[in-house]
Image 1 (tube, rainbow, N blue to C red):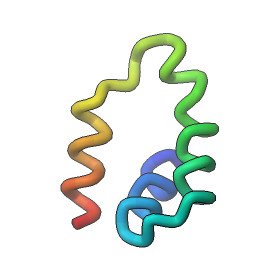
Image 2: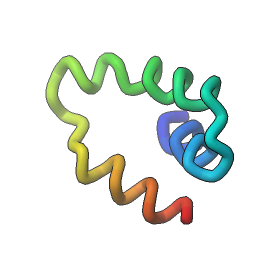
Image 3: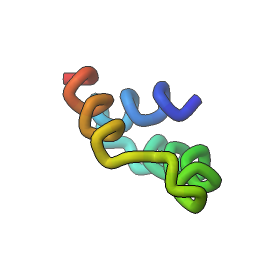
Image 4: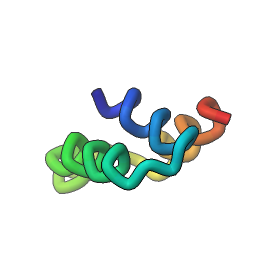
Length: 47
């Protein structure tokens, strides 16, 4: 779900998709396992 919502947000700019992404990532962010590099890679992949 995280990958889909990020790719959808990157392609459309839809705020709801971003909020869904942030909700899915929330538990991962607090544990420190989500890296900025992963977001960057997903963003580049969506373009």
